[in-house]
Image 1: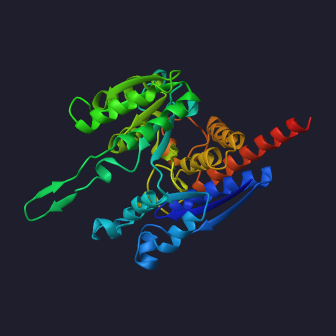
Image 2: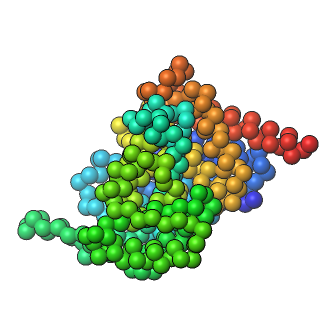
Image 3: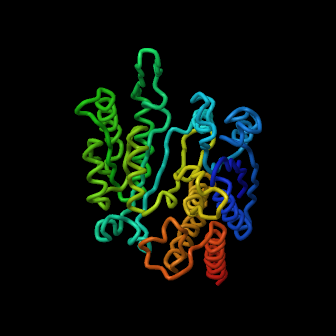
Length: 369
């Protein structure tokens, strides 16, 4: 299996967690006899410092020439005085648009070993396994017109969707649900917003092509409550851009930390993968960052771009084993009941690497019998 991966480490803790995720991908390639190549490139604040642009043309060219893009994080407070289209975060929006991925996949899993980390009771979160399918190229974040008139103290953003944009993201959700527990929960605000009325009508129409998948509709405000009260009731959650951004971050409560959450953006020219946690500049360079979100993001690369499901599952199982053995980074140490010393970013990455190597060696031995 050949795979070209562009590595956009970015800002803050991005380089630290991306390094550990890349090491896992290299281990899978070495142990499985795959040919993975890695091309580093700049994005965000480091790119502004180097070239004056949050997304240099060389970075975009490297991304478009790859089979997958692994992004660490963007964002640096020292660029806060710049106009929005010149800040580090603009590079992320620009590369999302350029690559064309419209479906953002965000898993939220309740890991048994981390049940004490969630403020929710273990009996509420136990067994929760939710996949958010968030539309990524429409809605308030990209709709026009948008402006802020500082003289009149007036601002406007536009939530806009077409039927085709809703239909294509709905099909992604139903296809994924058909391979899981066969349920889609579509989130909208159809009692108030015309855009949501279009959303609900279109999703209902697409559902007819998937008779084996159950569809339910939830208003976004009630969904926010149900997500905390009964997370096990949900399988695939389909949302527009803003609602998905908020709800998937809320679902970090189920897992216990934003540092545990991976994501993938698919459907475009090249798939884009990034952990959810952001750049966290306050802990950058201190070895405190949790690399598991980035490592689980690497598993999504193996699943959705390399089509190596067995290897993706092995990476996820290695993370589960390391957690079950009591190893923790600082963000997931509280409430875990673990007697192990707090692991650094590098130490946690190495623990997952070792668990993965053992699992793949066992698999090879079984296949050889």
